[in-house]
Image 1 (spheres, rainbow, N blue to C red):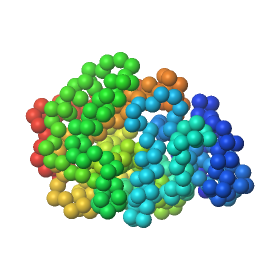
Image 2 (tube, one colour; image 1 turned 90 degrees about the vertical axis):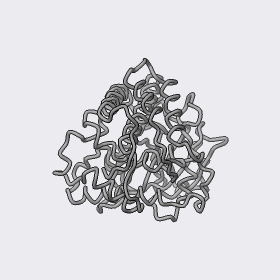
Image 3 (cartoon, rainbow, N blue to C red; image 1 turned 120 degrees about the vertical axis):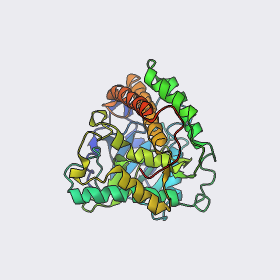
Image 4 (tube, rainbow, N blue to C red; image 1 turned 120 degrees about the horizontal axis):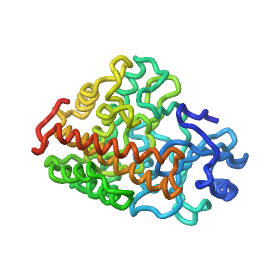
Length: 362
């Protein structure tokens, strides 16, 4: 059995996320090796969207991800999309867990789910990678953007993913999507968020690029090799689509712009002393791997990324109020949302009201 990775805390299944474990075991018997020797189910604490479980079956370990129970926003919690894109990217040089099965109809646990291998390694909720040597921190951060560049360099058509998402207009659609999600789940009005939405809509970059976009690419969604500074697997593909690759890169670098108080950044920390590369170094490394001369509209994409995360956190908080969040700590999301929306508005004021354009080396 693989050990539980660092910071991926295993707990007893939360009361609001319990299901019929005997029915699951019966369904998996004959479909997954090891289940004939019994099945032990525990839940991963952490992550706010699709409840995720550790399955111990004989000498094997698996991970099950399912939709949450209760009413869902249209298009959200797309378990099948997660499964299909990871299956399609298998064998393309991207570190991934092996997919085993997808169950959409007549689920024995009440909601659609899929099962994949448990990848042994380390998962860090803290972007500062506590306990890691500075030289390894640096290598992990460089490896992170190397994997992201590999994802973005995948030929969408050759991978059979040409219809995985709509083509063109990604940024405008994303703003509309997360604006609708925010308005559908907000508890009260927020002037900062409203101003950020207006500014983003008024300054959409003219230059479009297309690639497989992960949608939530960050340290916390990577399994790091147990002992080496290497990426063992990329997790949480729920938001993946065909999109603008710079939105992914900006989301990955968002931590450089947010304070540690948001639990999402380290702008107030001396990261150089810890071995973490500067933002401009990561961005230039990525650009070189993709053959780009520069990164256009960087400020815009960073602000866009903060807005999107803020909208996601509003939904997390709403689910917490409704008693359906995937993490007992979800109620903190409201305070962090307010900090993020205020930060994005301050960045807009620093950038100015004129369109953000040109090419930046960052």
